[in-house]
Image (cartoon, helix red, strand yellow):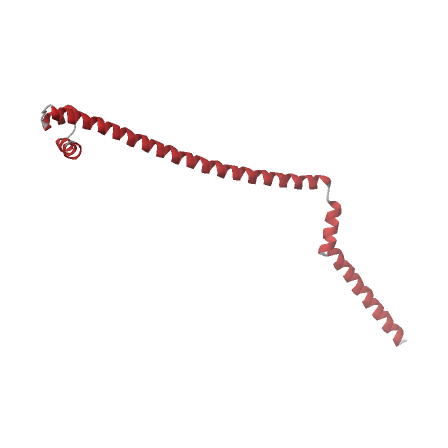
Length: 135
């Protein structure tokens, strides 16, 4: 009789342990994953594809924005250089015209004071031009 009770207790313990193992398996990750994969609808797949397309488009737009910004910065730099060169060219032309005028006036024996007044420049500038350019 003791053997029968012992076998019943062992059988009951085995049933309980198997039941717990089955419940754990139902709650496991692979079980949840399999269940979600079976519940996955076609529209979920399409939404995923659209997200991928949008992210690729956005990254392409960002690359183009960076390229445009670099292009604009380069063109601005070129324009600034051109403006500076034109300004320097104009200043050189203006200086050469002024030098010619001063030279002509000095050849006519016009005084330094009169040249400065007529050209609206300082006496020092007239003297400097005379010493540097006119000999």
